[in-house]
Image 1 (spheres, rainbow, N blue to C red):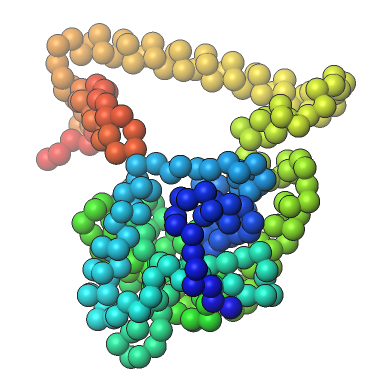
Image 2 (cartoon, helix red, strand yellow):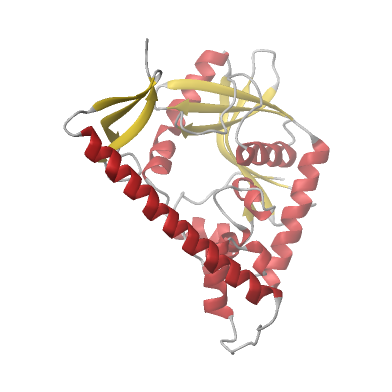
Length: 299
C-alpha cells in the first residue's frame, strides 16, 4: 500500500508517527547491524520519544538531498518521477519506507534512489559503481525495494561536498524478507518490554541501563568468575598506566636529545619529525597540536 500524505519533516506529527513503527533507515539498528545506533538507543527513542537532532554533517546532508538527486539523474540519464513517497506492506505492519526518490531509468524501468552525503574518511565506502556501500545503507534500500515493489536501487552519494558516486544495489528477496521479519519481531518485543535486554546495549549503555532500571540491591559475587575478571581488569589497567608513563619518559628523553632540531635521523631510512597537525572543524571544533612522529626518509 502506498501512502501519499506525509507530515512535514521534523514536525511534532512527523516525530509522533515515527514512534509508532520503524522506517527503512532504522531496520539495520533493529537487527543489530548498525555501527551508529544500538537496539537500546532505538528502543529509547521509540518508547520515550527521545529525538536525535542530528549533527552538522547530517543537516548538510539533508540540505544537499535535492541537489544530489538532480545531479545523479543528470549523470544517469534518468528522470525523477516522485520524491518522499511512503510505502507499507500488511505483512510487516510496523515497517514503512519513505523513498528519497523514484526514478524512471533510460530503459523504462523504475528505480529506488537514496541520496547520501558523506566524506572520504568513511572507510565503508567501496568502489564507485559497485554495491560496496556501508551496511546500513544496503539494509535500508533492501527494505525500500521490498516495501515499494521496485526491485532495483541506486544510492547517489556526494563525497566531500564535491565528488558524486553511485552504488548499484540489486534486490535480494530472501535477505530483504529476513531483515523485515527480524525488524518486525524486534518491534513487537520492544513495544512490550519496560526494560530493554542487556544484549541490546553497548557497554556504556549497559551501565546506563543498570543505573536507570537496576534494583540497586547489593549482590554478592565474591569467589565467582566475575570477581576474578574484575581483578584481572584492574591488573591490566595498572600495567597500561605504568607502561604509558614509561613510554612518556622515553619520549621526553628523546625530545631532550633533539635539542632545537625539528628533524633527527634515527636510522638509515627513518627520521623523527616535529610537525603541527590540524583537525578540521566539520563536526567538532577545529584544533591543532604539535606531535613527534617517525617517518620513512624520502630519498
